[in-house]
Image (cartoon, rainbow, N blue to C red):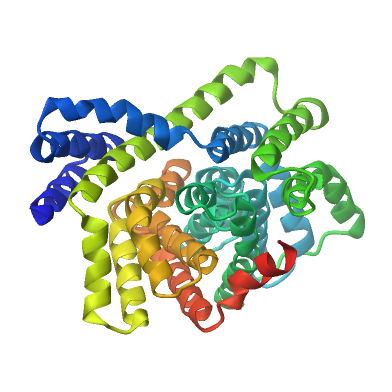
Length: 425
């Protein structure tokens, strides 16, 4: 019966129904089938209320609002120019500048889509004009955008903390070193890939410091948000509020790239994205409630315990499941569906949850550039209509391999994710 129910939800998702509604429908039909009919529907508002009754989740709409303000305020434009002026003369210089700008904007916005859109809109035409190969350009922007969920602040990390009870501050810290390493690996690949290209002329020091002064206020934002959390000035939720107010200040009064008439669109986008995430959360909890009634978590735990297989075999299986789901679902849905069942197993096997958080997020980065529904693939297609989706996928493959190799590296060196949280918290 559990297998049939699981196949049913998979069919709903594959049919193209939005994940939130597919999960809600599965939960409601599960109540009809397994809990005695409509009388069980009284549980729906209770589950919905408990799902969202978490102070940590206040940070989600705030970080989304902050990313929308920065996106509309074109803060990323200066970041790309900064990278171009300081790094453009190196081998593959504009590619390096693109990854650099993606990493910095990721640390500001916490959104992969916003990062890909903001940096890609400037980087793609500029790199193509300079003779860079189209597939490499598209892959660099698509993969660079994924850094938005690994480098803190990160909305998936907030969801992870809400589900597992782990400190969001520690989760944020765990992503810094792996995020920096991922950025460096992407840069090294681009240097190798573009080593034969003609370099552009180096900018003068006057030009470099001029763009540095122009970008200063945007560069200060991640220091304010992340630094404020780790120095104890405010909690991750308070940091989201401080970052939002600061982003409004710099875009209104420093860069003057936003006006009052832009606020309705910004707020509308924020409400739509937040509603989508919270709807998926409620749907996932309804679906999880039925799985709990059917004792699916207990069955999975018993399966792992009784078979007595090596824990690394189970870990490989978990990664394969996440990779498969990444081909048909987006990041938030995967986390909310799988994590309630996976984290007890991961904890039982003796894996560190802070470390597993990073492994999970790298898998989610893969999901963002994995066909057929990789979000960043379609984002890049939207801002580069002359490009074919096949070119975007082909350009993303080397970066996907780099992500997979970093998961392997984390298995051999878990301290890359756990050292910083242990030292600073």
